[in-house]
Length: 49
Image 1 (cartoon, one colour):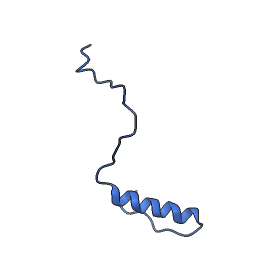
Image 2 (tube, rainbow, N blue to C red):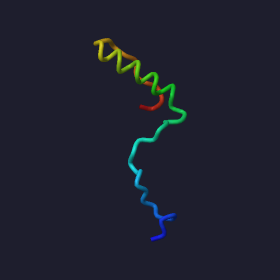
Image 3 (tube, rainbow, N blue to C red):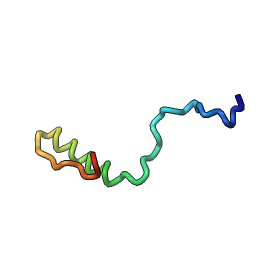
Image 4 (cartoon, rainbow, N blue to C red):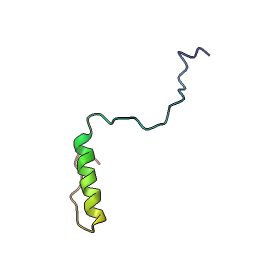
């Protein structure tokens, strides 16, 4: 098979270096997880989680 057109890439399945457009959700999720770790209640994370 032509290596340029081959759909199977060696890096497939590795985490992407950036999750673009999700910074606010990731920040809110981080705060929520930290609150839970301290035994505090947390509000649900918005954004359809």
